[in-house]
Amino acid sequence: MAVCANCRSVVEDAARFCPQCGAPLFPVPRRLGVGSELAVEDFARVVLGHELGEGGMGIVYRGWLYYDPQGRFAGTEPHPVAVKVLHPLLRGRDRARKMFRREAEALRRLAHPNIVHFFALTEDPTHIAIVMELVHGEPLSSIVVRGAETRPSPSAPCVPLALAWHYFAQLLGALAAVHTLGILHRDVKPANVIARADGVIKLTDFGIARIPAEDTGATGGVAPGTGAYMSPEAVRGDPQDPRSDLYSAAIVFYEMLTGRTPFDRPERTELMVRAAQLDEAPEPVTSLVASAPPVLDVLMARALAKDAALRPATAVELGEAFRAALGLPETAGWQAQRRLAELARTISGLELPAIAPTEPEPPAEPLAERAAELRRDVVNAFSTQPLPREPAGSKESERR
Image (cartoon, rainbow, N blue to C red; front, side):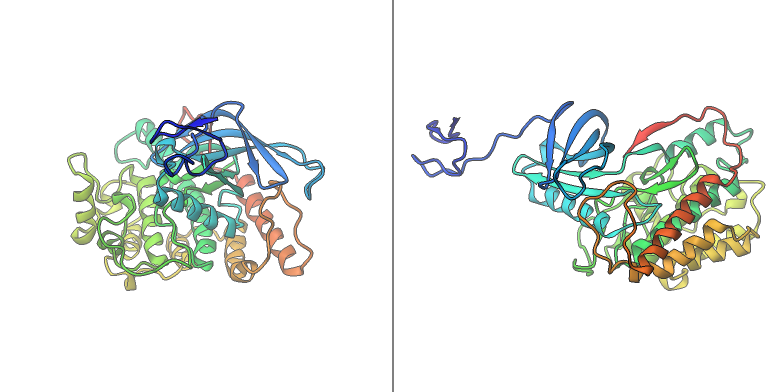
C-alpha cells in the first residue's frame, strides 16, 4: 500500500491516480546499491556490485550479467559489466532520461574494438541504466597528468610521440566508425578515452552524442561540451559535422604531448576558454616540447583551423596526414583501422541483437565475417605492439 502525497489517502501500490482526489501517483524510486538486481528485457538480469565512479549524469557500478538459462543466449557464462545508472536526483527529468536513451542508441549502433561495447538499456519508472562493457584501464587524462609529473624536464613530452600516436590512431579509428554511421560524439576528450593495460583504448561517454534522427540545426544557448576541447562551430552553437570531433581529437593529441590544451589557462573560466577557441591561435607544440618536429606545428595548425573547411574531412585523412608527415610506419593496426572504416557503412546495415556476450559469434554473412576479422586484427595489432616505456608509477583501475 502507498499514501497519496496530496490528500494522504491510502491507495494501492499499482494505482497511477489517487481514487479520492485524482492526483497522479509517482513510484518511489528504488535505492540501488550492492546486490540490487535490474531486469534486462526478458532474458537476462544484472546484479550490481560496488560503485566505480560518479559523474554529473550518473553513477557507474561494477555488475555481473546473468543470462536466462531458457533464453536465446542460454549457456553463456555470467560476466562482469559496467552499469551506468541515471543519477537519483535526475530520475524525474525528461531531458536527462532522453540523453541516457540517446547514449544507449549511439552505442547500440556501434560495433568497433575501440568503442565501449553496448549490451542493453534497462528502464522502468524508477530507474534508467545502460549496461556496457567493463573496461579495465585508466583514462588518458590520468596518463597525461602522471606524465607531466614524472617527465625529466618541462620541455619533455608528457607521453612519448610513438605512444601518443598509438593512442591517437585508435581514437581516429573509433571516430571513423562513429562518423560513418552519421553519429557525432561531441565530447571527445582524454577523460572519455580509456586505455587498457594492453595498450588498447576505448572511447566512452556518448551522453551528448548526436544521432542521425536528431535535428542538425543550431543548438542555441550554451552549447553542450567541454570548452577546452570544443571546436569554434561547437562553441557558437552552429551545425557540426565530423570535422568538429576531429578538432577535439587533435587537441587530445596536443595535450598528450604538451600536458595542456591549446587554449586553457589556470586563470580562465569555462566561458573564457570557449571564447579563446574562436579567435586565438594555439601555441606551437615546438615551443612547449623541445623534441617535437617542426612539421607538427603545421599539422596542428591545419587540424585546429578556425574554419572547418580547412581541416581534414575524415578521421582517416587526418590520421594519414599525421602519420605520413611524421614519418611513422603504416602499422598493421592502422591498416586494419583504415579497412574497417571503409566497411563501416555497410556493416551498419547488419541486424545486431539487443544484448550479446562480450565476444559474440560473427554473423554468417561473408561481409560480417570480414568485419569481425578486421576487428580482431585491430585488437591484436594494438595489444601486441611493443609500447614505449611509460613514466614510472603506472597503475590500473576499473572504468566504464
